[in-house]
Amino acid sequence: MLKEFDIQIYKLSNKLHVYEYEVSDAFFEHFEGDIVEHGKIDVTINLDKRENLIEANIEFKGYIDLVCDRSLRDFKHTVDVEKKVLYKYGEEEAELEDNVFIITKNTQVINVSHFIYETIALEIPLKRIHPEELQEDEEHNQYYYIDEEFESEEDNIEEDEVDPRWAALKNLKNEK
Image 1 (cartoon, helix red, strand yellow):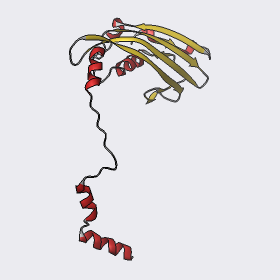
Image 2 (cartoon, rainbow, N blue to C red):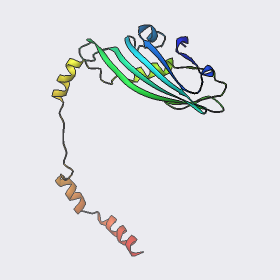
Image 3 (tube, rainbow, N blue to C red):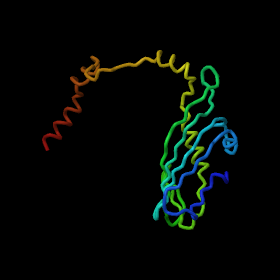
Image 4 (cartoon, helix red, strand yellow):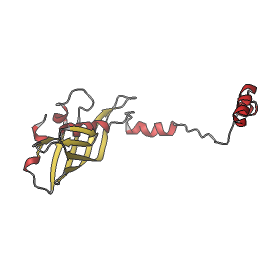
């Protein structure tokens, strides 16, 4: 893991601490796969250490370089997101949810590099469309509205015609 993203929590007093990082291409090279390769993001961590837990509010501002799925043109995708992460003290280390971690009282260091990378990777849209083409895409989208009161003739027929066997069973049920 990247040592510069280690936060020495055992040295921290119970108060608010601020950490600032600049994430760029060199950071992305440390992770396998090619989900994110290029970009520049400023990451600010407001870490509030308390007696029973550590709360980290992490702010991401910057961009990542993506390739348009249609035109294969490069473009900069804006990243502007805030995440909250909780580190609670417990018997053994575990991840309860995506943003809730259990750490032991003996934990001395929290490395936030993996969480930062995952958060940035999750900001990649499913459809990577260049902003210029996105406007064209929105113009060509067609929306369909279905009126709930609309029923086809086939639906009306099915409701009117009940299978006599089901009607007989229903009558038996009602008799009891």
